Image 1 (cartoon, rainbow, N blue to C red):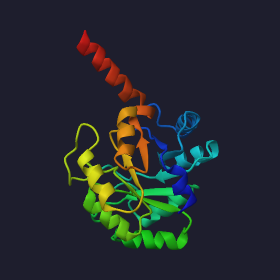
Image 2 (cartoon, rainbow, N blue to C red):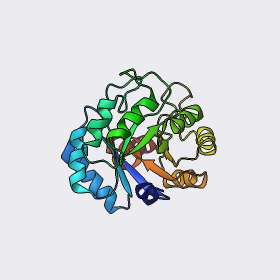
Image 3 (cartoon, rainbow, N blue to C red):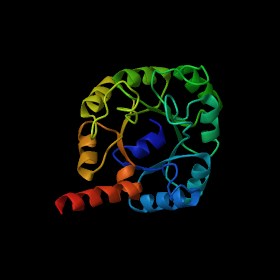
Image 4 (cartoon, one colour):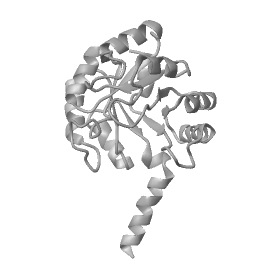
Length: 227
């Protein structure tokens, strides 16, 4: 098995992504956040944006899962082959791409995208961000090295649940042989542990660790409601 994939087994991956328009949207800030996460035990970092990825690459030695977001609807996570190449050139060990069965902006299928990318970057792994069991099976067949539950509840195929969509997680884990990274609405250590107990290879946590505005909102609402 690939050494990078093995390195992630049973470990926490932290997603360091600032939202548009917020104060933390700065490559140096995200690099500092990533470095702090690694100090806390993150075995890998997931991040977006070429500038952020380059800055983070200089600060941490753990595997880096890179992506770009082009727009915010449809297929927007590293949507084209060109995007895949640009992300890989920042030094990521893994690129994350939309792994759904939806039409891609450049007209390539997921299988074509992965094959053409691998021809140029055979050493870089591909993580397919999927929205359902059907996506996961198709992504595995298309050549993805890692399956993510990232888009469950966001691709239009399944409703968005308040927390983790455990039904989808169970279906995906049972349906594929590739490592499954559970990502999306993992808000507590207990939920992360449950993901592992349900067969996840690794767990990706973002908002609950690296998004102060959301975390503050949780506490502010709790205090307000209690008062």
